[in-house]
Image (cartoon, rainbow, N blue to C red; front, side):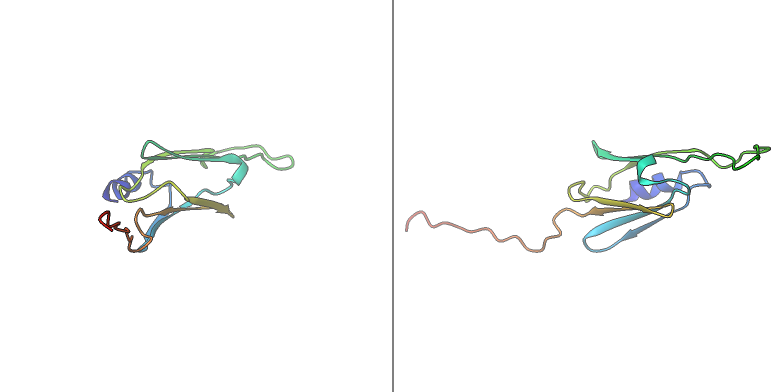
Amino acid sequence: MSALRDALRDLSEDVFFDLLESEDAYLLVLDVPGVSAESLDLAIEDGRIAIDAHRTKEPTDDYQYVEENRSLFLDVDLPLPDDASDANATATVDRGVLELTLPKRGTSGETTIDIVDEDA
């Protein structure tokens, strides 16, 4: 997970996130203000997490931009933790907050292997 932590620390100061860990999963919480599920692309491939978020912002009524400092795009490429699995990963976005849950591998408890006695 240290590679993921390092990559998150290297993000712009304008990107706010929390990274949480439990015994069986990781939870990445990322602020994506103004972004909806329709304007968010998230993919996990080749051990990488790709997040591409677009915000639409149109001036209202008769207003025009004098200064524009809020970014329209967020393009993040992060390493998947070594013990995380992309299988059964889930993501939700609600009120501009993305929550990505990544299950850990081998967290289903003990695996029992039946041994067959071929002499019997």
